[in-house]
Length: 262
Image (cartoon, rainbow, N blue to C red):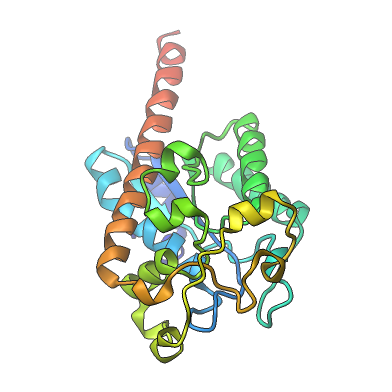
């Protein structure tokens, strides 16, 4: 089966689901929103898709067939709403779509839904956490490495951990590694460092990028970005996704074993 889910025919998918190996669907999640004057609106989707594809080889080594679903490119993004190009949707709308996707995957026999997310807007992360719990309740295991949790955050870069990481060195490096053709380097070279921490601003009640200290929709140090850093960061994120999926599939197999013995 082709790794890009939508490139397959339906008989190919049916045959894979009928096979002995568990089949996992990876859903890249992001937003269509402003990412500074130098990065594309699709930045989050690019990063999430890169993470998902990078994880495929590791999952195959564990005997897991994985496919990358068409990305979910719309999410709560109210902090960037004032900037042209940002498309924000309600948490309720995003949740409803996720649940419908999960129901369809469960009905077909997928072993797990893996969420590859790089849109760290608090409303989006809260929505994904709640949706993951609901989907598990529907009977479909979910693997969701949440990089906003301290344990995983500490595996990422210093800038990411500082909270000054929207369209900064962290995200710019990842896009340089995946789609350098979409980075406006002339604009990037003109950007001053912006060490304002989004996480600190959010905790103090900021509701927009402007209130948080990002009048051009970027935070961090975009001029310091490099494709080398981006490739390493993508590898780390993909390993976290792989571990999450392997753990969920192993638990699923353990739960299924007693039933098979009955």
